[in-house]
Length: 116
Image: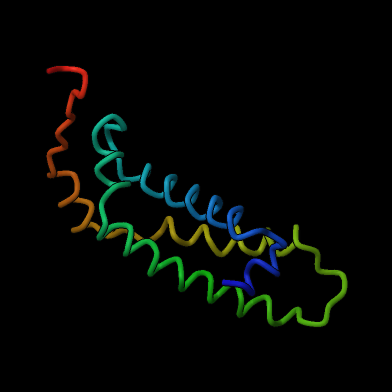
């Protein structure tokens, strides 16, 4: 991951924010009802593992593409970010149908901590 941080000129925290934002937008594609479905999908461990596994492949592809520009002095972090964004958009074509279906079937129980 350090290579990605260097290429994008981002801190670990900034990069994690970018990935979390992508994850949330990706999950939103599967939520019909944001009130219930989105929470179920975002908080589902198997779905998160699937996303992270697939996103690692995208990160590897990004680094492979960027290797072609090693030594180029005119490539700036904003250019690398554009390449990263083009690579990361691929995640929106990946869909764990069975995992999404199972996550939506879960019942979320809201506990009212104010009631005694």
